[in-house]
Picture 1 (cartoon, rainbow, N blue to C red):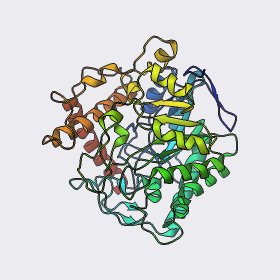
Picture 2: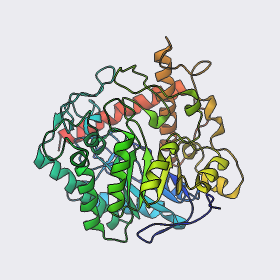
Picture 3: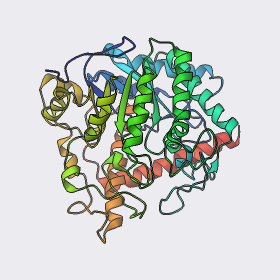
Picture 4: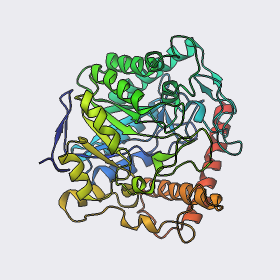
Length: 436
């Protein structure tokens, strides 16, 4: 019976030490020029010693103009000697003790914050439905720009390989650019990049082919794909099944299933905080209580593919992880937040020293409990959700600076510190690139 301790051989021949993967989490540790720093090496070295089979990096962007946040690492064009050195040090630290370190490559698309770009880009000029003015109205990419995006992804993957990273993951989920092209709600093009699902998936498939051409057959390539956008008129589960079949035919080494977008953030366990009428129904309590948010969607994809599947989001107990693997529902389980609070979580689970990861997480909230989308306290719900996310992000900064996580940090205090950090990073980003 397969457990989290079992090794996994990928289609490309690479062997993963165990079945636990650190889910990709944005670090915000890059300098003002979006170059990797010694903080990346410190953080990933700490995680590599913690026993996890695969460490997925946070968003490494392919275009400095369109970021998920100002502190993203960017790989584009010719890399400076300093950047290459920092990437090598990051890779060396993150691959200690036989750990796999895979670079997640991404383009933020229309989900580029206004603090980074007033006019982001996307497949079409469809505005992100979020409160406030956090995101500008995007302009549609030209066909020439789309071809350039493909080349940028392939270039970043080759740099990752050359500097010692042991694999790459293409981010095609969570409403970023590749995910936007897949969505008929966001992609309203009438050329070869829009319309039918085959056309909407063309960008993703061409990226995979271009990367494989650059890195060869023995280098792992993964994709993070939404099981669904959970939005009416968006990328559906049926679409996901078909795209998974196409990826399987490309010889993909690992498919990670996730879900949601900024408008419908199921990726952090939240639902429709904006009460946007176009969003799908709110998840029922019984589903929220499930350990793995997206495990139920893996069965249909498993039935039509033979590539390894990774499911991330919500796993906390060793019992739940082993049960999912034993049932052949997935081949790897991904955890994220627990590794922010305790970088040795994987080792403790593998050794049987703990049964539940991040057990204290339930106490991280403002107020007496959860405030749902139909509550008059909608602002409190948002503060709880995004405040918790800020809390975990700040722990990455602490470890990147050589310190241990601050477990007694309050959620509201974390929210304020996180916002201040983002504001400071945005100012440094603009000061650098406007002077370049």
